[in-house]
Every structure is written in structure tokens, then in C-alpha cells.
Image (cartoon, rainbow, N blue to C red; front, top):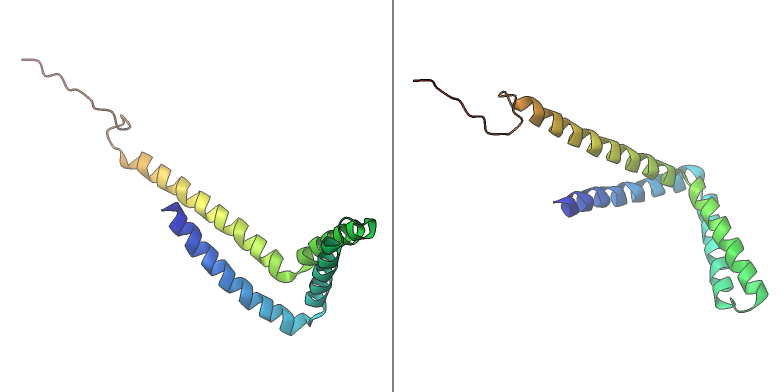
Length: 120
């Protein structure tokens, strides 16, 4: 069941993320996307020449710039907010189910069998 819930949420996040990426490109231009692509190219050339000193330098500079570029994308911030909101809603739904089960028991024994003694 948990896998099904994750698949539904992840599919929705992928679709929403793709739509938001298109919106980001249309509103802010290709400047942020171009910087991500440039960072990826720097990482590629750094990885190809990693045994050399300048290859290591390019690789790690590319990784750091890629992380900063990705974190500045508006889409990534929205996806992070959506993930936090989904986690909070899932947590609240589980809490509500637990409290609903506790209040549904009117015997006050919380699921235990109670014995009634009748005097003759």
C-alpha cells in the first residue's frame, strides 16, 4: 500500500515539476537553465580528466555550481515545499486515524475483553 501511495505522489510531482519547468523557462528565460547545462558540461569534462589536477578542480567546481544553480531554480523550491506539504498531510491523516480509532471505542477498555459477573 505504501508503494502505491509513493507512486501516485511521485507521478504527480513529476508531471507538476515538468509543467513548472516549462513555466520557469517561459517567464524567467533560459538563463538559469543554461547555467545548469554549463555546470553539467564542466562536470563532464572534469570527470573525463579526473586523474589530472585540473580535472579534479573542474569536476568539484562544476558540482558546487550545479548544486547552487539547481537550488536557485524556482521549480526545485516549489517541489521541496510540495514534498513538505505532502509529508505534513500524510502525518496529520495518520494522527487523525489514530484519534478516530481511540474515540470509536465506547467501552473504555481500549480493545480488551471485559468480563461481567452476574450474581445469582
